[in-house]
Structures are given as C-alpha cells and as structure tokens.
Length: 360
Ligand code: PMP
Image (cartoon, rainbow, N blue to C red; front, side):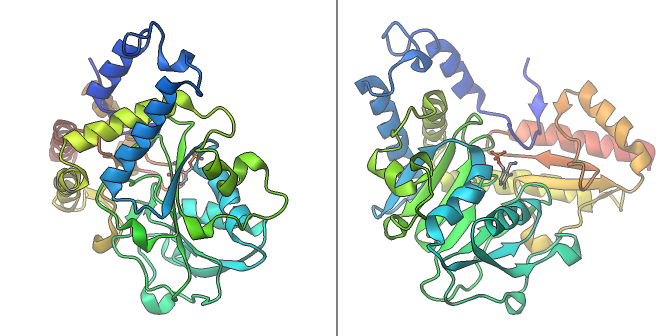
C-alpha cells in the first residue's frame, strides 16, 4: 500500500512507471539482464538514451538548435558549472527570489563577475520583483532565474523583459514538465531529476548551441557542456538507470496527452489546496502573492504553530507524508508534483478541513 507522498524531493513517481521498472529490473526486453547491468556503449542502452531524448524533445517542443545533456552532480553542481561554461570573462545577472536562486548567486560569485539584478529577500521571498525593480545589464553574459522556488513556493509564469541578446538561464528543477514552456525563450534550462523527472543523480541541461564553446580554461571536461554535447552525454559513464527511468516518465506524460493536459490537472490540484487554505478563515495561511503562487510547492502555516505536530501526526495516520515545511520557513509544505494524484490532493484537503473544524 503506497502512501500519499508530499515530499519536495526526492518525490513521488508514477506507480505504473515503478511497476514497469520492477518488472524490467532483472530482465529488460528479454535481454537476460537489467539496464543497470548493461554497457552504456551497447546498442540497447544507447537506444534507451536516444529514445529518452527524442521523447523529451517532443514533450517540451525543444528546437533543433538546442542540445539536451544528461549529466550528474545535481542542480547544485550546475550552480558552478553554468558560470564556468557561460561567463567567458564577462559578468552575469542574478535575480534572487528564494533560497535556491540565492544559492546559485552565491556559488557563481566564486567563479567570476556576477551582479545582483534584483531580490525579493526584503519581502521574505513572498513575491516576484516588479519590472521596474530589476536592474538588468544589457551586456550580461546571461540572466539567471529560478522559475520555481521549491522552498518559498514562488513560481514565475511570465519571464521578465530581458535586454536583447542576453540569454535567460533558468533553474526549473521543481516545475519542469508541469506545463508547456517556450524553450526558445531560454538560452539554457536545467533541472535536477528528483521531482518531476526521475531518481536523484541525474540532471538535465537544455542549452542553445551558440552558447557552447565558451567555457573557461580550467573547466574539467566532464563539466564542459560543449565536450559533453560532442560525446552525446557519454564522455564517461552516464547515470544509466536514471536516464532509463526518466525515459519511462516521459512516455507516461506523453500518454497522458502531453504537457498541456498535465498542466490542466496541475491547475486543478493546486486550486484545491489554495482554496482550502484561503477558505479556512485564517486557520491556514500561505504568504505568497496570488499571481506567483507555485502550482508544485504549496507552503502553508497554521495560525497556531503549537498545533503543527498534531497536524503532522494526523496526516501520518491517514498515510499522508512529507508535509513538514522546510526548516527555514517552518509550517507545512505540500509538494504536488505531476505524479501526485488528485486523490492524494483530496485526501490532504479532507485532512485540512477536518482538522480545522475540530481545532479552530
Ligand atoms: N534548485 C532547486 C529549485 C531545487 O529545488 C533544488 C533541490 N531541492 C536544487 C536546485 C538543488 O538540487 P540538488 O540537490 O539536486 O543539487
């Protein structure tokens, strides 16, 4: 019996995908061995890799002048790898809208010139900066954004107006594949796998070809986007099991009707949770400005934090887990990624309403 898993990541994966993985673990397609045991250079695994890439291109509508890289080191490694590859002795702009973009900004500071182009820290990361609050450098090597802040629950539905020629680099770790995105508006998109894609250990980078080949001389070859692109992400042994599982998740999303269909479900799920919060007469509260409330990560506090432990205990009794909020913001957080079912969301809303009715 599976729980309803609201963890921010690693997070719930589609049950049907996990069942297929279980069935294929010992014997993939009659080959007498599983994916984890196969050479990455053999035709079986290269087929898996190419199919995963083709399905991701299809799902996201990735234009042909973009490379798709399957890398390791998590999104955190990208915080360093991106400036190493793209700064080229110039300066980059960072907009800080939560803990993750702040970490990316801090890491980039070790590696070259970076500017803080805007920050919402003074408002406790509960909103996005207004257009007139951004100080964008028209000469910047790139503009870095985190388009969904997993801890603060702030999502960007529109990109800021960016000076012509400045590529946007986006950390989409916690909302990639949750809705259609126009890839052509970005120079580079990156996402750790362990929320909407698959197991931790895999990170996907989608990069426009003209941004390749600018890496600083000290960039190790496994961290050089151009070198990894030349070798089809296989300069060294890639995270084969993660790529295989990601490929199954991509097929699962295509079978659901693609990202436009997935988005409709995600809108409905998020609305149920935010309505439960806003309709609670102040028993629950989400502090984020309505237009930028995340559809994937819903942080909320109880007006009386002394009830937090009891809320979590009742959740556990109903097999709802992973709801404790990040320690930096406290309270609760419901991560409702693609693989969280509407039934799971209904179970959470049921608990929230019952609990509030008894304790208010
Ligand atoms: N960026 C975002 C938006 C995240 O949510 C996370 C992880 N929760 C990271 C970066 C860091 O990812 P990793 O632990 O894979 O390095």
